[in-house]
Length: 247
Image 1: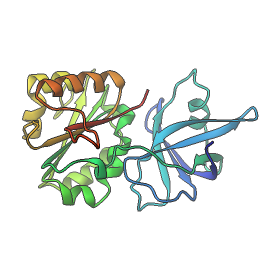
Image 2: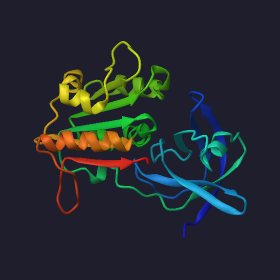
Image 3: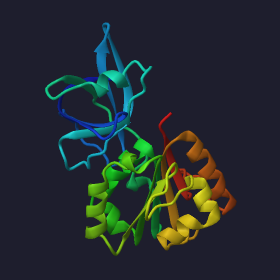
């Protein structure tokens, strides 16, 4: 049974009518960048909680989660409505293997995210380890419209600070937008457009892919990678891609 910490909301930042970032003060213990934690509320005498990836890097004490509202859901509409000073519950046991420590030795690290799946990658990108370990880090961030491209300012700062190592490839699927790809991630890999935008080959010899977000994206990208001779990473059998599903 999960144990719970009392947390307090310090900010609820609305990106759009359906996307928000919730910042929470809670005395959570050690966590690795890329992990998730249970966040919940007591509703009708029971704790209702869901796992949410932490956006903040571990060195920041304020926890941050980024999520979309599911109108018919039992929890997200309530979390979405929280205001500064409101109470929230945070599980004491962060978990998940979408971390740099799980990535085998390689030169190029690809991060592929749909929508709120970008959260764990933002946490990882806020650490020193990712910049020390890899020659190139490519963030592929897919949303429907440019308005949904959250955390753009943070990503721009990363681009300036790590211009020699970092490549950001925005993917906007439902509208034309400058300096972005209008195609789903699997299609952009198959066409070669993603690699051209990144200026890096996606291959088994020197690449590892981390995926987070929509389960269909993960399934389809995994199939494309397997067609290139890449295999799912396991501790007992090191491979070329890892994933975290959001539903």
